[in-house]
Length: 376
Length: 133
Image (cartoon, rainbow over all chains, first blue to last red):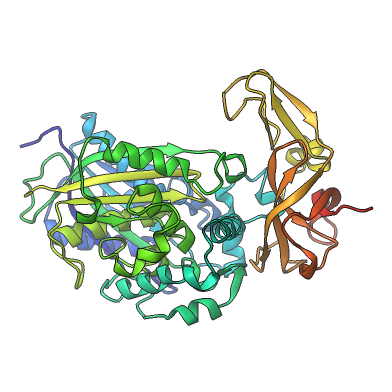
């Protein structure tokens, strides 16, 4: 029986990695095949594809139609979504909207990105496109530079040394060990973080996300009863934008992220310690700032609680699961779905609530989704 | 990345000088120049030239490799507060890394941003150097 609710009923992923022998089509076919084998034959009304670099890297526009053709989904309508690094979660909010508005009953959301087709310096010139090209990128300024400035200001304001901010990365690598889909499944130490290559001082290689390819898929439906497994209901979605770093009143704030969290949490009285949380930690300093915006810890205190945090980025986060740009938000929801229902490798939690946060650049825009396990 | 010549040309005054905006309704000033105030959405905004003088709030030494911008590595990237008030992010030149510090007084200077293949165009824009004199 259909309802006005929107459910996440299934998810699938490939491990984030550098797939030199597979095309973007191969990766998408893999995740859609896995999804089909888990739920059986389900008619979909719409295909939404989250992908950022199709025209920059793959010389491909209208990638959602090309994929529908490849997947044999024609004549179903399709849509490609792009809002920078937050595209994945934006795609899910678009699928949610299609179902809520009655245009579709069931929507397949696919996230896919190929980041290892070219050497890193070539990819870097695409990664900086998330900032205003005419104002920043044309000068050769990069997002990592902005984040480095932010990290220095944070260290000075709260009296932290460089070493004090290494625990986020250590924790993410430790979490990723149990996630079969994570790109970096090995432990690191704080010493390795501070000895890794300088990218933009004080940011070092092990403070930031690795470059990798990925594909993930989730099935959204207004019928939670068409699959045998447990499902999640999407209770709330939120999206917001903010001005660039240099125009912010408080340089250490993430205004769009704060707006998103306020909306997500306004109706539900949640104890955040009982919520499975995934946040957009493209750089470790952003991980700290995001959980402070969330209210999980007071400002300036995040680095001191990381070791004891056992409900944030159980996947390993962008730092260790990886960040296949347009696919990342879909991974986050796919992982939370598995963690709260069938299990994600060795990770399974009985929590009733999940909160997913995805953003672009230094909070140029931010997206959030709140889910609830239906059996709760 | 190859730049479009008309696209660069039409913004030449923004690239060859520092231009900021002042909102005549809320009084705030900001960089880059815009026709709508980012703080109060007023259209009652005027462009004012900046002296291009300011001070370094904080800075980073960047080894990030960017295709087309690899002539100088590392780069010194700074958050700069202009004397007129607005804050911007810019590259520092003509200074040793060891001499860069917070509070350093800097001034705008016209420098090469990038050049395309040997027969291609050279693009110029604003960078910052320690104030002379």
